[in-house]
Image 1 (cartoon, one colour):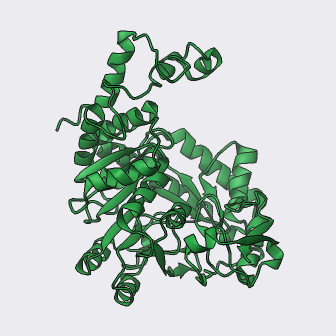
Image 2: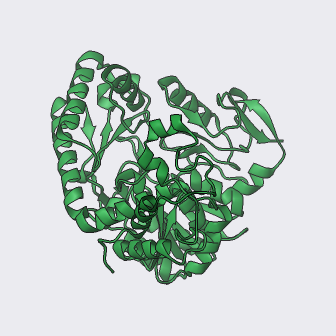
Image 3: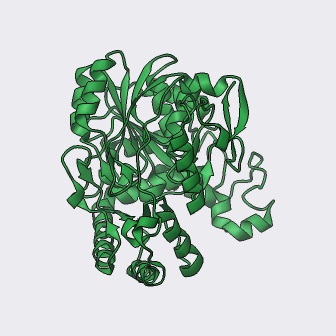
Length: 479
């Protein structure tokens, strides 16, 4: 196929030039009905915010330009089939799970998964078999999946339908994906990959293996993070052993019937850009990240992740485009550095937790921006460094799973102050966001250690989400 094509974008340009008179939705009629919005977004943007038509195809039942665009994406990513997704990678992940497991069936997952996986289990009723990740006390994070842990879990649960893998984690850590795929397939299980932070693996050189290249059955790829498309746009990729017609049905259960052509065309254009120039683009990103890594390391007291962490198992590989930085020796929590950068230096980084922060380096960065971040971090060390023993040490708190997420979420519940919740079973999720990994999921026992960790996170400024109570001062528990 001709990767220079962008059929959705091309069709929208033709439509825009034709000056069609619209008597369909959206009601703003190419922006003319909402001048304030058109002044804000621009005439060109508003003119292509259109509805599905015979000529523009339909995302739920593509037979024309969208079908062609998805076929081009499949080829570019080395997949058997691909789907434009406009509900974010959350929708891609949930469609993967809905396509693979049903109520009562088992899905093997690392416990440090994104909230979207837990929500998918709430909806479909599948049973999670958690693998508690090994952890790094030095970094204060959960690591990748140990192959031996996966092997043992598969042996103990031979009736599981699939294994779910983060590729990579939020911090850039990768598991031995090829070996996990080999083991799962040998036992008749599929492998599903959360590649929300791994779109560049498909196009850059010298990066960890992508899901499709490793033989995974499905992968959810967040193009808007490292691929350059608009926020909320994603690809769902499938290998040759997956029925794409079945997957389309699962997607259509929850995906909108009024898909945004702004999002679809952004995927189409971004795929073309990466297919033609991805190697050069991500080589530049790697150079930016390497420069920042070296300069920040020279400041002192910042420990910047690198491929020196690789241990052949729980850190099988590392994404060198990620600028993950541990702040323990600085005496500041990562979230404190995050807030200082924003409030005092007008720099917005991706997130901070109790031990680390992540500055996202991408195709949109410039050398002067990297240097501004480096300079700000130098000043923060000079002005704010504290004794490191003031920070809590990270300790992974293995959950005690009592009920499935679906059973707990839909059970009768009552609200308790978090301070009184220890010993009860949680009926909802609670997490810091980002990164959106639940500290508690529905069906897990609330322990005092978890309550203490949540309180420590709150005190340092982490944003707590997921609970019905928007302040996260109370939590829903089983009656």
